[in-house]
Image (tube, rainbow, N blue to C red; front, top):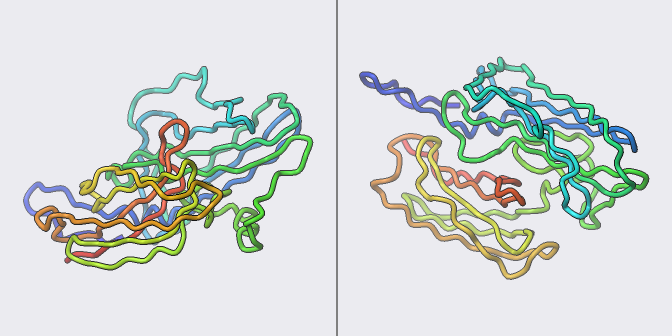
Length: 272
């Protein structure tokens, strides 16, 4: 992370949180049988500096299990009470924030997905516009987990390692690909390919402090499992561009609860 110039007077220092998001490694594992599901996940600070994670309540994480019909069969926070006060966790380089839950619940045979989310609201006091620390992993009761026929050995290895920040593991490399970027000084063209549900995804642009482009929907020709090319043209007024810092585009989908998932970060330009 590069700090901007030292503040003048009482101005607070500003940070670019994107490098920290990218260097917080998300690991996860799920072990299940018909009587219980053991869920373990963690965030490891792989940066060279300490990072302070802020949470809007005493609830640090959420776990949701859905069946193959998309019905929620378990939600960690359901029926629980959490203190509605700011909670912070400081991670020194190499430190790890861990979560583990043993879900003792009888589940019928079938395919399931468990979504694990660290509910990080701020990094070093800088607010996040989305939920980048989220992973979705499939598991099965009484049968083998269905495999994606388009998933090759590299993706299989990624799922086994379970190390990825800010994206659903079962969709790593299978939602967005082949990004290209041209342009400068507020005028940018981003092209790529998307494999998205309902043929729709979203994007926004920020400088790590201010949102320059609010969330916008992009519709592509075909929905998943087909790939479709897309082109996004942006014209950001020069008076809105930062004097210093990084301009970053976030491309993502929305889940059934309207929460961002499968986030991808596209650096547009560095200033100053």
